[in-house]
Image (tube, rainbow, N blue to C red; front, side, top):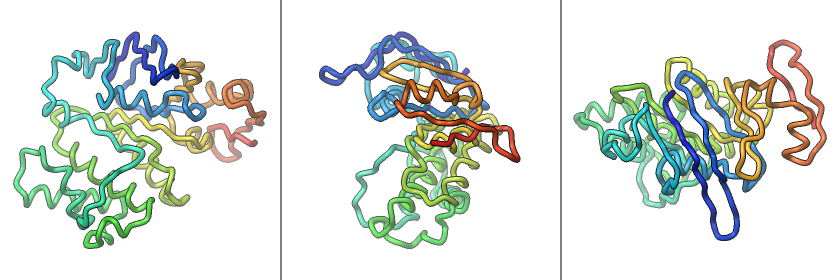
Length: 254
């Protein structure tokens, strides 16, 4: 168990996003969070990343978040946000190297790590481009390289949170990004992703948590969660679910 949250509630104005919410997230798994718009998926990641204060109990690696030094936790917990407001005319290389600011490493070492992560996320060929000139999908991949650089020297297994990491990507990079997430999880990391594509979730998730109105309505493997009744109840849309013709995961047909 890498993350545990107990009895957390969150409201913005009159909108209740999470209500008495409790769950645990395990290492070595790719956990995908699903649910309709405005149901609390990104809000949950903001509680996990402490962007928003948690009025319940939040623990990492069995220790309360309040007992951690921020610098120590930042070595092992990183988040790829849904949006970035970065507008400075940095090169891609400089943006990725920002992930190394907190590392106990020389600039030469940080540069080498950043280059490796740019290669992994397929942005090395963009290294000298100015960041503002990139497309939305290219920017997403650059920030993924930055977060991976941040976590590169963690003394423990890492927690990587991805908020809609495939939203601006073409089909090839969608699959490459989730394949990378799956690989990191198989190597022991805790990977949590919020996405909207049910079929991508079915193909790559080890575990799916389906939210609706701030509650968990289903939690389990893709075949356990992605049933016609669950999807229609949560999304208000009738679907068919069939087995993939060449693999074991379900395929959702609208």
